[in-house]
Image 1: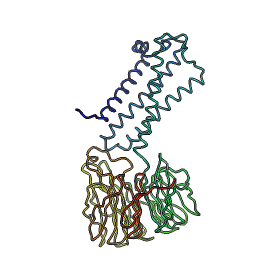
Image 2: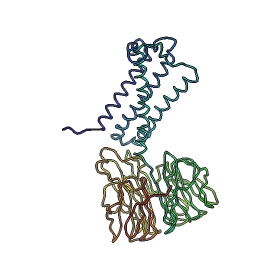
Image 3: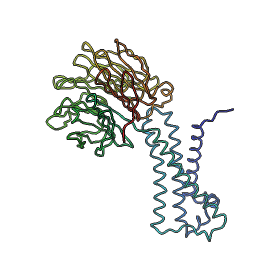
Image 4: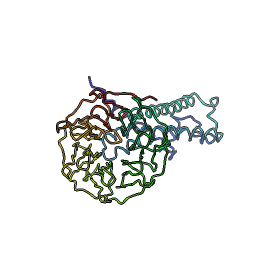
Length: 461
């Protein structure tokens, strides 16, 4: 018995919807070609001058709904086969059902405000009644399909928690995003709770100076500052920041797209000269006079990633032959640190770099997929998480067959080994404060390290 291929069915349905909407569009633009189609599938009044405007509005609603819904499913299938533009295609596909709803809603409002009457049932023939019912049933059905598609898309993207930082054994913070808006969770005395914050677009990183002060950055033009028990917003000198590391209440650094580097001093964020135009993903300061930043390379062209070193008041490029992106850097001291990353393109790669004796060297990884974050307890013990460090699902055809959505690695005795994760969701960030205390966040996931084991917990609403 042949197996049922749901993806193929959705793909064929989407093609049918797109074809139908195209034919009706042609019928509207060239009435002579669509006159017969009008007569069969729409009420007789469609071609009568007195009711033509109302019929055209209903036709536009019908066509728009069919087109947007069809394109949604069509792009949903294309997205699985296009790596380079995957994030853009996913976003467009997500918005299309909304456009279908907006299309029909605008038409309905326009009909009421312009006083256009619906087709008189008393004057319609039986054929007109039937075709009218069919037309409205199709429009209503397409709207229901739109809502279903939106709900399905929401369930797939779910709530990504991007970064976590523990301040002490009993205190921590995490940032995430829901429907393109940032959210912040506070961990206090064993409980996670969401915090009220100003409106902000897609939070990307957080750095706490103490339990009572910290900063968060976003890919918009807004930064958040936590002080006196509340989060407040302030304008950022640049857009699309991706990493931040505060040294003290009066000193800190942030990095972002296009090689942007910001320095916080004397109560102001100021843009600093950068030796690169590539995206910088993470920054880790050893002191006020020394630090490191990593980023790049280009996901599509696989250009070399970048490593920057801050010393003597300037940022300089460090030789780096790697062709895979670097996603996170964490320094233990001026003499030692770690960086992780990798590529999701076929063949997928995993990168672990160790800074020691004045140079970065690649360490063997027990997995061959991208890594997202690293947190070291000491020079001899640490943890790495990964599997999906991108902001869109890892479903490129070559990568999705081999990529695991969650990866947890433990460093002991000079070797990285794989540890079984208690969840099947992607892991994005980790923060350890001692050998037996740490937090991990990911796709709608909070993990606590308790009694030598990682356990999943749920935040309070």
